[in-house]
Length: 419
Image 1 (cartoon, rainbow, N blue to C red):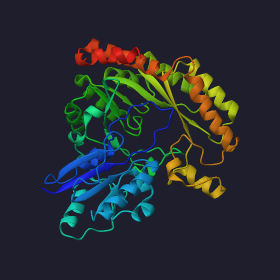
Image 2 (tube, rainbow, N blue to C red):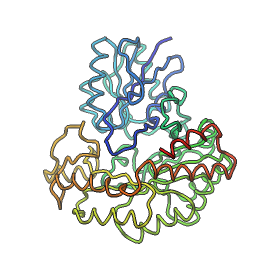
Image 3 (tube, rainbow, N blue to C red):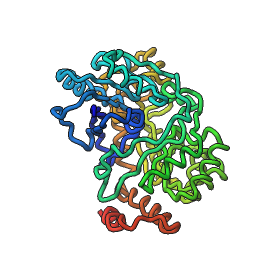
Image 4 (cartoon, rainbow, N blue to C red):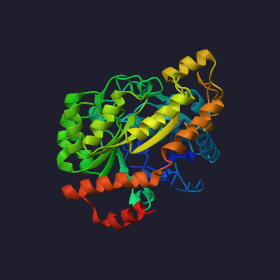
C-alpha cells in the first residue's frame, strides 16, 4: 500500500496565548479527498514529532498560516533531498502561491473535493505530476463536501490539563462580507455556500466529542438556513463555539437552545451596538470572547485604553488581542502597499503579535507597547486560566442540565479549574 505523509508545520505560538493546541481542520478536510488505497500518516508538528527517516511515497504539506511558511520551506527541502515529491496546499499556499511554488514540486490551489485531489494522486501514480493544479474559485459542488477524516488525528495529544479540546467542523463555506483585514473573500469567494443540513447533522453525529467549534466564517449570512440548522442541532445535545452569530433575538435564542457555548465576537469600538450584542448573548447564557484588532487607522493609544476599559465594563468573558497584520490579498494590504507602510515581509514575524507596518496614529513601537498593555490590563484582576475555568463551568452546567455530560471529564476539570 503506497503511503502519503500529511504534514502541518509548527510555528511559534505567541506568549500571550493559552498553552493548548486545537486539532487543525484544513488537513483533515484534505485527507478526506486522499484515495483510500493510500495509507495516511498525519503529523501536526505542534504536537507530533516529525521523523524524516520514516518512509513515505509522497508528502502533502498543509499550511494555513503565513508564519508556517519558513518551516514549510525547511520540511520541503529535506524531503526533496531524499527524492520524495512534495505537494503544498492550504490557505497559506493560496496566499503565497508564487513563493511556495519555488520550494515544492507541486502546488494545489483551491478546495479538494469532487475528485480534484484524487486527480493529483492519479497523475503522481502515472509519473506526470504537474507543477500546479489551479482550482482557485472553481469551487466544487457544496454537496460533495463530506465528513472530515478525523481518525488520522492523535486525539490524545489535543488535551489541556486533562480536558480534551474541541473538534472543528464547518457547516458552510464562503463569505458574502469583505472585511478589510480579512482574506476570506479572496480565498473562499463572496458567495455564501451552505452545506445541506442533513450532511452537516450526519457529520456532527459522527464526531465522538460533545464539544465542537463551528469554524464557519460567519453565522450571520442566511437567517432561514441558520434557523433550520440550529433546529436540527437541538437533538444532538452538542456544545459548540463559533464566530459571530446573526444579532437577532430569535436567532440567538435558537443558537442557545441548540447548544451554543460561547461566541468569538469582534469588538472594534465602544458603541451601544457592541454593548447590546454582547448583552444579548450573555442574557441567553452564551459566553463571549472578544476578538480585538489593534492598530486600525482610527486608533491611537488612548483609544486602545478606552477599548480595554470597555471590555471590562461589559463583562466580556475572554479577550484575544491581535495586531492588525497586512496579509497578502486583503483589502488593507493593497492600501498599505500603495502608501508604503509595510515594514518588511519576514513571514515568521507575521503572527499578529508583532507590528509589521506603520500605523496611522502611533509609531510601531507605541502600538507594540499598547498590545502588551491590552493583554496585561484585561487579565490583571482575573487571569486567563480562571476566566476559562468560568466558561468551562458554564458548559458543564449545560451538559448536566440536558444529560450530555461525560463523567470521565469530571476529575480533570475540577483539577483544571483550581490551578
